[in-house]
Amino acid sequence: MHNPGLMGGISSLMKSLFGLVVSRVELASLELADVRNHVIELVAIFGAALLAIWFAIAYGTATIVALAWDEMGWKILLILFLVFLVITGVLVAKGLALIKQDKLGFPATMKELKNDRDMLR
Image (cartoon, rainbow, N blue to C red):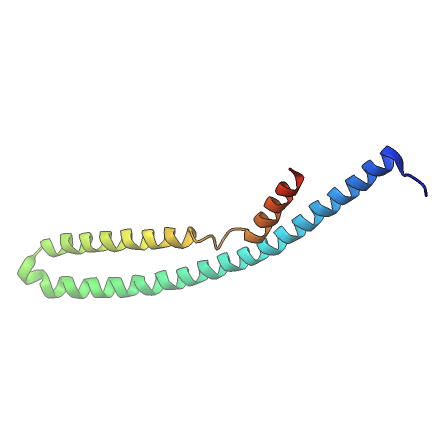
């Protein structure tokens, strides 16, 4: 039986490492495609929702101001400002919570890279 020697072993190791890197890059690219699709879908949904809510808020606010102006005057504008400020804070907090759910991450790739690192120790 022929012993490949040091150069043969190094060559075999390099081929194995190259194969490992290629498989990890392929996995990352698949996950990146999924993330891209989720981001596009999320942006489209938020864009349509923003447009719809803008019209609802504009007409609703105009109606409230028209109905309450005789009774409250300029104070109704301040009250509506505060209401919209609170709503904005709640929506921003909800959006940040969605981002923290790691839907835009690479869980399978990160798991495999961690496994690789653990095996090399």
